[in-house]
Image 1 (cartoon, one colour):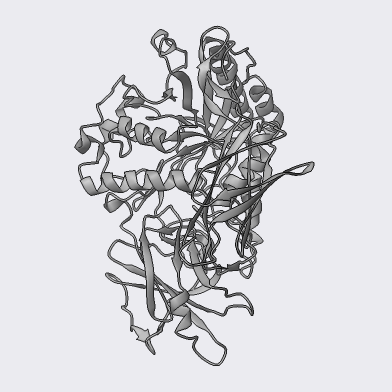
Image 2 (cartoon, helix red, strand yellow):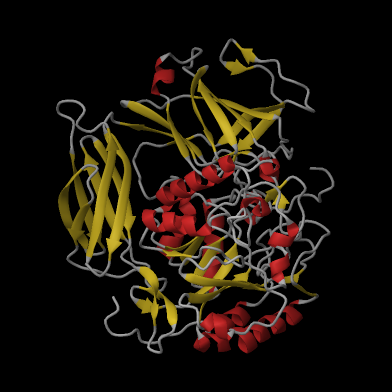
Length: 615
């Protein structure tokens, strides 16, 4: 990590209290009153090639020597971790800490939750192996009840939690996003280890494992599935859950729902969710002694013709223009990990204030609280899946920027996807991602592949997405190497003037400009390095403002009438070498006055009438 400038802290990173790190309840879509946050100061050691070694376990439970302390959940490579060391392939990052359970906390089962650990890990409690996980961007849960029952250690009743992590980064086929050990340009500093909240909850033996809420706006109803493991396995265990749905006027209805059975509940009052009116219904669920809360929004997504027969993106059955920003979700001090809940709110609120109606979450899965804030604040989400694969071939992923090139993605080796295990892992993570984010109200579009990065069999991936989630739109190949599938004709245009071509207008799919712009401006004192990456460079804010306005008024706005249905401007904030954000990387400077951006986004909308007969 040598050679970098001193860290650029965000306002939230600068004010961070190490005793209250991301302390908010981490799973807003399924909330219980049982919660013990384990973020904060842990011990760490890095072992393996190029390190000093490690003297093993102490008393069979706690590791002996530490390299120092690390602030979880910030990766060791980040400034906020207090470490700033790069974990290398072949090394092991070992974490440990002790904890005590508050009086009355433990019920029948104690569950240990990890929001995300990059890339594979094993976990022990009190020296007992309790499980592990592979995959750097999805949550996992371990039942640690048996390990706790072996007894705490010492006169204060301490339990010892240990996590061992390895990360191949971009040297293998595993999903990695935009991380690279040799960072630069559009590829960012590789990071590793725990990077989302670690927490405990205690639940009854029979408890809700998952809640699935599927709104049916046309049918004025919501389909509820209360998923549980263990219900009915013992005499007296509840097999029926009690569900209460409320709106802003109070309790709307209550219903008995058989567990593990999708049940349609008709609503007496329906208020559609939109970015302009992000109304959410509250849900309460009781299953025996287990009580939890959740929420949902009544909305529908899809594509269909407008009054002129042009295919458009639909929201609640009507054409709705998605005016979006590319959002990498990187922070100057926490990298993948936002420094605080307020920091996440800031980014979403800024996009809303500037007049954008959508964020494309680019090659990253955020903490669930980010999606919750999108739901309640009202902004649409396009969700990219996280790319993997081995080394990408430059002609495959870069030549299409300027050349009309389309390759068949069944040629796996050309796309870095020759390894069948890597392809299987991606499809497994696709399924897990859908299940993880299924209840997100604002999530409108799935994006399985971007610019050929680890792309393969995109038509099969689209079919699987449709099987798992038939209620959302699919952009099957964002940018290039279009296989003719999905719902969108998805274009990336940076170096040439944008104009809708006749063949694009003839495509039965909705035409979207899913990346464009990328105009850069360095903000001295707020930049990451001496390098600069952007598609066009400007030296002052006035020049950037003029170019930003001309781009939209001369190229983008005229295309709306011709059939353009969505735009994704690159991008919300700077990221490392990329200086093409509307905000600086440390989020302290807005490069353009609000009025300049708002004058443009005010033109990125349309209200044509849908053909009669459309839902």
